[in-house]
Length: 302
Ligand SMILES: [Zn+2]
Image (cartoon, rainbow, N blue to C red; front, side, top):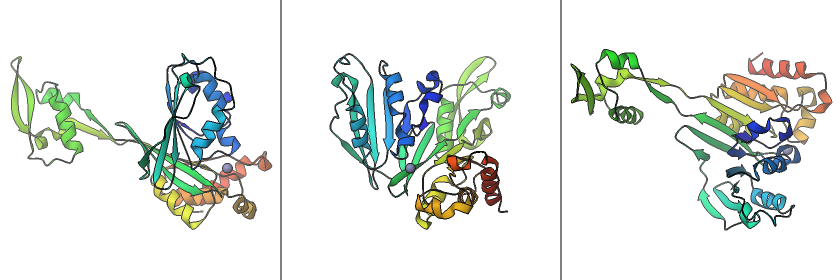
């Protein structure tokens, strides 16, 4: 997973090649210039790259790909799938190296705030106002259900497929008296036994998944505040831009960016566990401590 494509050259190429999904907030240069670097590393690979971005994003990908000549890539298996997030719709298009990255037919699906929903995690997005649509993202791991093997031993149970049924029952909120067939060890002989979800519940330990949120390049307006707080709510880690200090709040608003104080207030309103501010304007060279202090003070309610 990669949020934004800035100067990817600073990343270890091995780490870049682990990327399978990219989420681009908007196509201002500092957030999208790394696309070429990504493409260069992935070009000879048998891989599928999924790239999400805001309104007009498919045209941006198409234009970037059209900037090069692709007459020798007919045997290259690389596939790029672009996804353009519009207010109610996600439009997707495929670009294959083998066909010179020609844009294939678009397909549409409804957008309900979720970009990616996999068994282990979910990525959501909100569309913010940065004088252009700009996406904010939240990645939430789903909770894990693990079996406590010491309880399994104590109850004389034999592992098997029935454990998946038990996890499934717990996930779907099944009542205690719901019947379930478990495997029991009796004097070395394994047999099935009718029992219930309630009697097996102590076997399963639920560990809460982590949530990470990412917000960049946005105006501190009531609409944006509401959308950010809703998306970011109770994140374990909230990465939030804070290019400006509050002393330059007018400049920040004019450029549709946040101040450190505003980042702190957003983190506070969303009740996040930890706030990490970044994306500082070069005008504050040597004053990073002031930015951290201002964000921290607003976050803690000082
Ligand atoms: Zn921007």
